[in-house]
Length: 352
Ligand SMILES: NC(=O)c1ccc[n+]([C@@H]2O[C@H](COP(=O)([O-])OP(=O)(O)OC[C@H]3O[C@@H](n4cnc5c(N)ncnc54)[C@H](OP(=O)(O)O)[C@@H]3O)[C@@H](O)[C@H]2O)c1
Image (cartoon, rainbow, N blue to C red; front, side):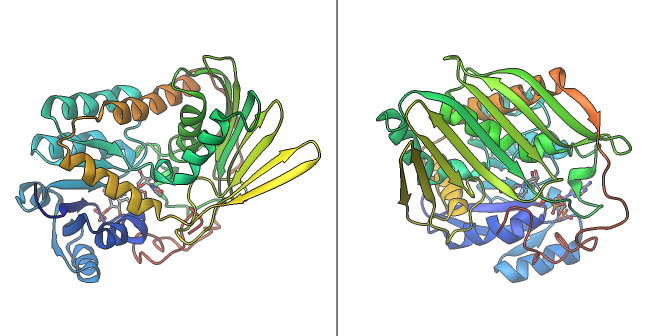
């Protein structure tokens, strides 16, 4: 393959318009050729904004000037459309979660492995250099022995019509927000994690979880306490607690591209703050995806296994969870219905 990786986008989602399409357009190794929507007028609007062409979902799959498809559909549709993308010989960047459960994720992973195509979930925080720096500090013994991980991704309630409140579309806080602290635990404590217990607070009418907590334990016996949800004030952070020091990172999962991450390391009688350079993690994600595609998808098994691992943990949490009824706010949309995807100008829940 020569030239930039040519992306088509299947679904003009809020996150696509706000974050991923600008990143595809600005990264030198990627370009946007087509956008597809169920609604022709919406596709035309988005295509006009990003300087590409518009079609529908089926039309996108037939384009031979599309090397890779970015798929930001609701999770319940990831397998159905993702399988068609791979069958058409196109690389596939799927929004997180890869699928609603591990069985569907494994089907997608199998199809990608058989066809030699790149399949990744768009877990953008993994590309931010700040987490590699944390791992270096831990490996160098800066915290002593790691004794615990605490991680959280929570935000306030969304519009009543948001896909996250739909059971049929595989909404819910665990799949939408919980996958961030889960993947963080995998990154910091290793893939051999087990779920020791969990609580899910569920909306009894809509049948989706609005928030929850889970306790995991690593192969080395380190516990991880994880919180997620959309009924809290905003929080996106993790703390690694060692025998000699504690490291905290705020705005860990969805920092704006201009934010300088600050690693705060607290000891008994001393605090050190390390300020790192800002980084555009959506550009990092599409750039790494393009590099993997250029490499012919040769070394993709690690990424696929991690994405699958996240959903195995989510399955375990659902199996083990103590479920309690939550009392959702009724009739008071936090944002007017349709303000997100329809306009593409909302700030969104990711703090950007
Ligand atoms: N990586 C990140 O930081 C990040 C951040 C936010 C969200 N996400 C993920 O991105 C995905 C989309 O989230 P979002 O907030 O962008 O959602 P959204 O704005 O509701 O977008 C979903 C899109 O899917 C398409 N769609 C197809 N069938 C649909 C149906 N039956 N109901 C609703 N939409 C349907 C629509 O596109 P058309 O109308 O154009 O066909 C819609 O715009 C989710 O998997 C979410 O977890 C990732």
